[in-house]
Amino acid sequence: MKSVTYQIPIPWKNEKPCLHRMIRQIQTRPGMYIGSNALTPLSHFLDGYRAAERDLGVCWHGNLFPLDFQFMHSFADARLHTECVCAGWCHNILTFCHGDEEKALNLFFDLYQEFIHIEMKRYWKAILTKENIEQNNKAERCCVMGEHGPEPVYKNPIAVYVLELTIPAYMLIVETTNEVHTETLFFSSAEEAKGNSCISSGAETYFGKIDTWEEFEANNLYFDKVIKTY
Image 1 (cartoon, helix red, strand yellow):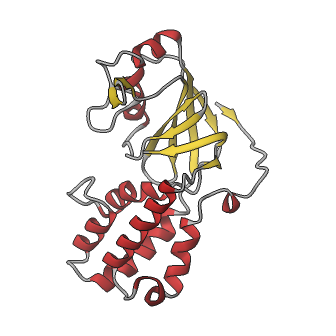
Image 2 (cartoon, one colour):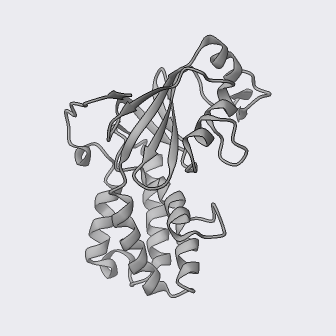
């Protein structure tokens, strides 16, 4: 196992979109921002905020942590052990609180404090072979509908990463020549993230058999590329 030390040129707080900062502001004065001490208005507010970021083309690069807010869905599932996987953090927190909006809002902020302190214990990296890339490029294997028909999920991939988190979960990252893509569904094991999973899509779902994994110790990853979360 290799140990990696990263020299981070800019603190993460200056690199991320300001959604994390906005949530902290809302917590101090929820009535001013969302009109009440209730979870549903917060959810609507954050949905609109993220939609505005997308319309304005807001993107970020640098550190992976704290995780993009999109991971809050998977985190709430894992933390609350909810039955409705992928129903969304708002629905699952409200269900857990039996519909009590104020109690749900308070629980959200408690969970959020845990969420932003998630870090990485270690990671595995695999440089993709020519065969892996060819497998990815086969539209019938795993594709999305583009402007001109089916196209690979990942364009020009070069490497994949599996991260072990400080919560009992793992995540998958795919690096391409221009971008870094993070899969937002957590995995229960490194083997599941590396393999051909049938629920969350593991690395081999896209790239076929991968035998070149190398293990590293680190608590963060830094990319000088745009990071996209789906």
